[in-house]
Image (cartoon, rainbow, N blue to C red; front, side, top):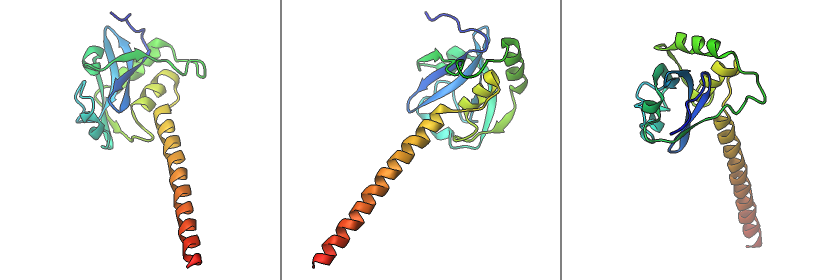
Length: 159
């Protein structure tokens, strides 16, 4: 029922616990980074495959990659970066199909991959948001630890 994405569109797939990204190359197909154990539509089980350090560039039907998960076109950086011409995006994407590439959750993941193809800029807001949340949580935990140390010292001084 969804309108067909346009060539070069970024496709955000809502997996449980994370977002998977692909780039639309036409005729119902997307190119995406998949850890070797990734099974299309695997959802939560593919979270474990994200711990690997290798990925394979695959060209598959969007319908198969999304599986039962919802997805949407999300060209969220069009206001910051000028997208490359669609024919160049597709050419670059298809040249990589079948290659095994380095995969790191924090610096070379599926979101970095598709942003590099569309804009020529590798970035992942998902990683940035996670790092920021972890940093805030870490500061909170450190503050609680410091308060705990101060409280226990204060208690010791009274005895």
